[in-house]
Image 1 (cartoon, helix red, strand yellow):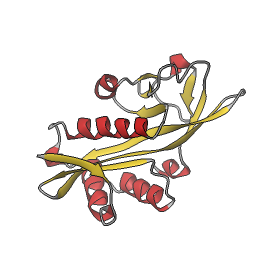
Image 2 (cartoon, one colour):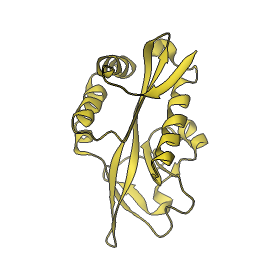
Image 3 (cartoon, one colour):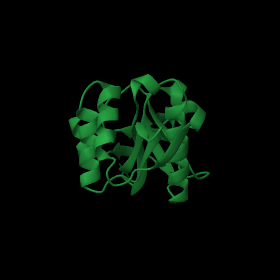
Image 4 (spheres, helix red, strand yellow):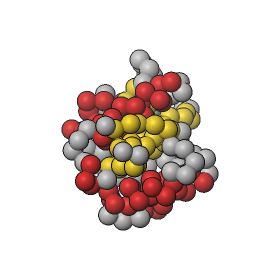
Length: 169
């Protein structure tokens, strides 16, 4: 059985291992550690099975800037599941609970860079038709947005800037 819970003190090493194993490199794990050190994790959840951490999802603040305004939102990622536990719904459960936690925190908008087939069922759609782009050049279908509150994007647009730690990934 899988339990999803908030990250707690003492989880950092297990989270680092899960992320490194899932991505096959340290960059994403280093990113999460750096965000944690600066207290820039809006939501950080782990998936546990048998007392072992087998998955993690992070949400962190982003800034959206347009000529008219600057506003805050949340970025989802990275999400990681230990390879032996993948394709068992753990990533889905982590994202679902993370979005629920963001709603409880009164967040309005979440951005993600990822596969539309995975993120679409959570309500993510391409951001470009909403007049929102990422500061990096990526295929339009991959940079997505979800409204956590109805009409949260009404009249809004701009360029999304993640935390500076993302520049190293």
